[in-house]
Length: 287
Image 1 (tube, rainbow, N blue to C red):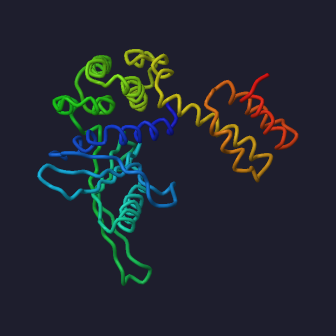
Image 2: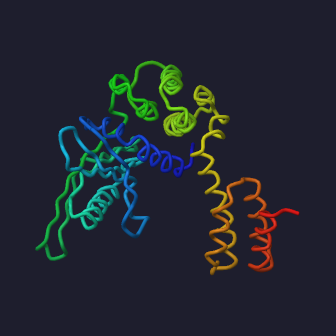
Image 3: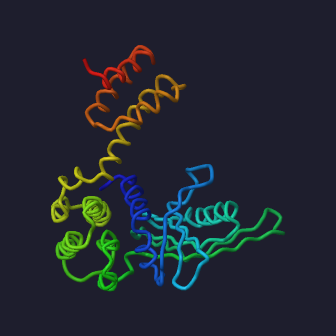
């Protein structure tokens, strides 16, 4: 099975590049223009997966949509969507629409799109509601009828008749035919990531390009580089709790997998931080 970070990063890429397709999947139509907004508030770990500014046909005032992608239904999502909405409200003084897309069922828990709680003495109460899309309840054929290549990565997680091989062939065909050249590798890679959530079968992934396509995807390359950087920094911080920010930035600037592997060994064995800094310098300017 793929790492959860794969799903998180893949979902965020889809929000940034194909956010309108996600809204269409939730039944939102009539979009004239849209854009993904950069986070403008602090505490990045508490920010929503995506915030879209959406303009509808015939309207000049934008609406704001929070998009959250949940791998499985979890109780924490209720508090999460409230926090997301409040953060946006405090920053923009407007209550946004909220949409949660749940990728896969787990046990008997279902999110009904509602929540409430009261203060300790019960004199203050909050109730909230939002839109939940459970992918496994959606019809693949209905999504295909939209003729939107941005919907393709979600198809392996929806309802469809026949063998998964047939569906993945259709996904590959649609991406090959409709995807912009600069997005093709990422769309194939993200579709593989979503497929692995439902099917633990590496042979199926060959229909979407397999490991070769993963290595060609800028998104996956970035994800692998980030993992390597995290390993280096974790090894370093285990020995030196206070790592200077210039060293952190230097590690984050390295994307080559072999270099990061070597640097991970250096982080675990270097006699001091100056030796580690010298190793980074040598990598940047080999003799």
